[in-house]
Amino acid sequence: MFGTGLLKGLGITLKHFTDTFKDDRQKVPSRYQDSVQLDNGRRIIEQPLSQEGLLTIQYPEERRLLPERFRYIPMLVWDTEKGEDRCTACGICAKVCPPQCIWIVRDSDENGKPVTRPAEFYIDTAVCMSCSFCAEFCPFDAIKMNHDYELAVYDRYPQLVYDKEELTVPVEYYAALWPAQYAAEQEQMRAKEEEEQRRAEEKKKAAAAKAKAKAAGAEQEAKPKRSKEELDALRKQAAAKAAARGKEGESEAAPASSADDAKKARLEELKRKAAEKARQRKEQSGE
Image 1 (cartoon, rainbow, N blue to C red):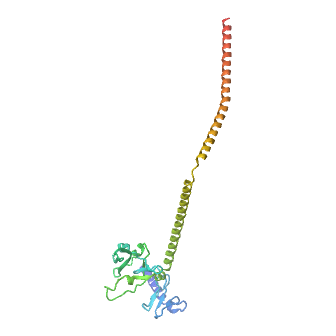
Image 2: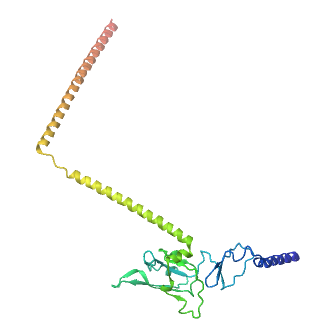
């Protein structure tokens, strides 16, 4: 058992050892076939995790192509279209930061009234743990995670404390680093704007319908009143109609009364006949 297991492990180690030289022994495909040559002589190599026999990148002459979701330190996004910071100095990022490495000072106008923009913004990159909580909780998409990881310096303070000027990047820089995420955010923003526009149009139509109904009511109230002669004529017409209805009622009541009289006479006749029959039966029983 121990002998076969040891031999199997050595075989796997030998296989990986030989695979590391596979790229060097063959020219096609080459380890540099998908690489990008920079102007300074350095090379960016795409090294997928599924690649067998992972090669060692000769840093700093060679660098690995970073994936889109790679994150290191935060950066502030400058909206070039509006010409302003997306950050409103709300302070949510500073509250959710686990190591508390963010400091924000809100700006104010000439009257001393606070305005929604930061006057100072600091991040201590020596303390930052790259958790990206600030980017996730930012309600204005003002903070994103940068891909710049080469931050080595000789003095920790103050060189690793980045201010607002060092943290701010244009939105085009963010779109280049995070193309898929940027496209999804733009689609969500477009859908939100369309929904707001639709609601505004519906509100506008409802207001127009309400104003139209109000105008119609005012027009109805503003109709001229009837003159005295018209009112007298209407009263005469109503009286004539009432008289006609009264005559119709009398004509209907007359047949009804005659029918009642006939019914009473018939009842008297039946009573008389019943009395006559009773008298006859009494006489017959007496005999």
